[in-house]
Image 1 (cartoon, rainbow, N blue to C red):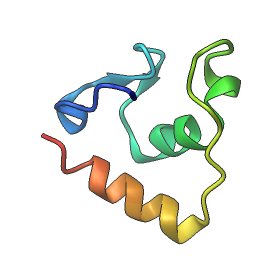
Image 2 (image 1 turned 135 degrees about the vertical axis):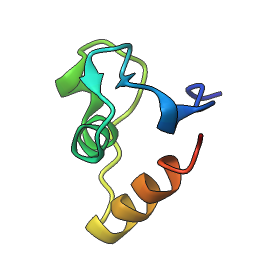
Image 3 (image 1 turned 180 degrees about the vertical axis):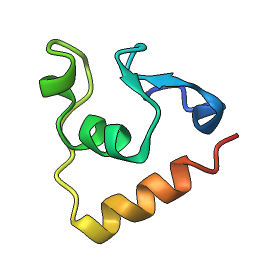
Image 4 (image 1 turned 120 degrees about the vertical axis):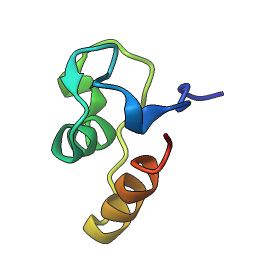
Length: 63
């Protein structure tokens, strides 16, 4: 079970429309979602910088 990533790259907003869909906002949401939107069901994801960049690059291909 996980979030719906359908067409993620074409969305203007992420995190239940609380952030613009930019690489920086996406990184913040992935690393510490509770700081962005307390109470959400997404766990923190402390990724190495290279891994985080690779994930963001991949997510940006989901048109």
